[in-house]
Length: 131
Image 1 (cartoon, rainbow, N blue to C red):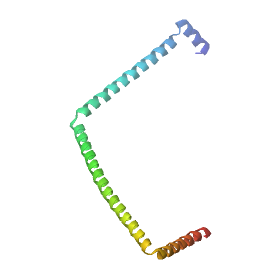
Image 2 (cartoon, rainbow, N blue to C red; image 1 turned 90 degrees about the horizontal axis):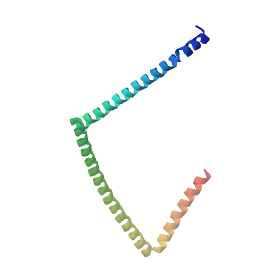
Image 3 (cartoon, rainbow, N blue to C red; image 1 turned 45 degrees about the vertical axis):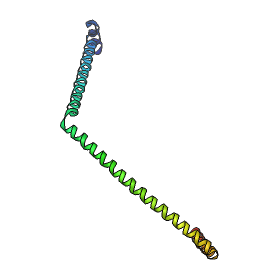
Image 4 (cartoon, helix red, strand yellow; image 1 turned 180 degrees about the vertical axis):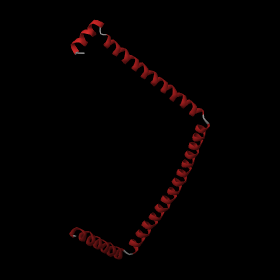
């Protein structure tokens, strides 16, 4: 059938093909919406069942226990690090005090040691630049 004849028949029918297409689109859209709604209800029902299930309660309890264990481990680590820091600070303070006493008691020797240390550091740093 030629396009001209088909168009003429469509005009005579009052555009029934267009109406059929519109009805088909509406039916498909309605079906999609019903499917979405059914899936949504299914997901909601599954959430409710999981919320009320014993497995969910066990997971919540295990999560709480793990959180408490992590807090306890964090507290113990924090305490140990704090003690280590305090001990290192006291040792450093004592070392600084000992160095001050040594410098007061032996000023000439302290100047020579400082000069030798400066010379060695300068030599090492200058040597790296040439390489």
